[in-house]
Length: 404
Image 1 (cartoon, rainbow, N blue to C red):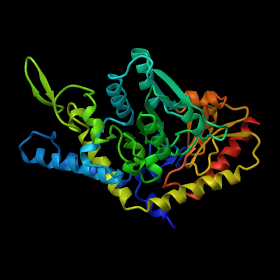
Image 2: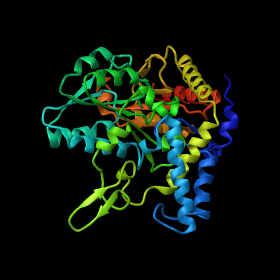
Image 3: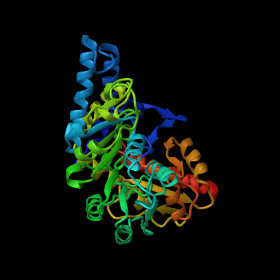
Image 4: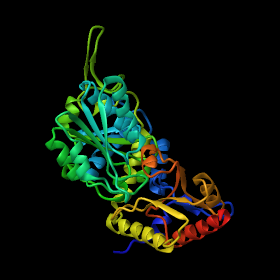
C-alpha cells in the first residue's frame, strides 16, 4: 500500500509557493482543500471554449455546456452509488442541509423531535434550530465521550416515537471521529425517523456508498473534495425527494406556470431554481475524475500515518491538550497550547509557513463540551508529507517555547 505523495503534490500548483519566505505547509484542508491542476484547467476550458447557460438553449454552446453539466450528475451518482435522479446540485453542503430541513419542517408539529449530536458543525445545527424557533420542535443532542466517540447507547436512548429526524455528521470536523453511520441510520429507521448524514468531511477521507449506509439524505460540499467552492451535493432517496416540497422558486424548477397556478418539475430539477453553478459543477466533475484515478485506500493509510507520526512526536508534551482521541479517527489534530490563545498559536505558526485553522471551527457546542473556548486545528490531506508533518511539530515546539 504505497501512495506517491510527490506525484500528487506536483498536480497542485499552489503548493509550490512560499509564505513569509518559507515553503507553504498547508494544514487547513478540513476547512477547504487545495485544487489540482485538472480542476483549474477544466473550469478554464469551459469558460474559454463552450460556456453558455444550461437547459432550454438550442444553440451549440448551450448544448455542449448542458451535456457537460449533466454528465457530472452521472459521475456523482457513480461516485456515491446512487441513481442520477437522486443527485441534487446545491451551492454547498450548508444549502443542502437547509433544503432538507426546510422541506421536512413543513410537515413537523410542535413536540416532534429531532436528534443531533454534540459534535455537529453549525451547518447541521442552525437549520434545525430554525424549526425549533418556528415550528416548536424539540432538539435532542446525543453526547460525546471524553475520547470524542459518539455515545451510541445514549443516542439510542434519545430515540422515541416522537423522533422525526436524525441528523449526524459522518466525520467530525474537529475531532476527526468517524461515526458508524450505518448503525446510526438503522437505529433511527427502527424508530421511524428520517436520517440525514452530513458527509462534508467523511466523503473526503473514505469511499461512500449511500445505498449501503441507507440514509435518506447524504450531503457534501465540493470545495473540501478538491473541487471548487460554490457547489454542493444533496443525495436523497428517490421516494424522499418525491415527497419533499421545493426549497426555492424560479426558473428550471417548474413544470408549468400560469396566472392561477403552478406545477413543479420532478426531482432533481425541482430543487435547482435559477441559473445553477455551472462552472463549479464542471470543476467538481474534474475533481471526482481526478480522485477516481487515485488509490483512496492508500491515501487513507498515508493520511493516518501522518497523524500517527505527529502524535508520536508530541507524546509527553504536557503543555498540549488534544481534543478527540477516537479509535481509527481521521487525520485531524485539534489542540490547545497551555498559556496561549489558539489565534496566537495560529499566527505564530504562520510565520513558519504553517497554515492551521483556529477558533471554534463552527462547533461551539463541542467546544463547550470539552471546556475550551477555541482551539487550533491541523488537518492533513493527501498532498501533505512526513517532512511537512515534522516541520509542523518543530514549529509548534518553537511556538510553545514562546509562551513558556
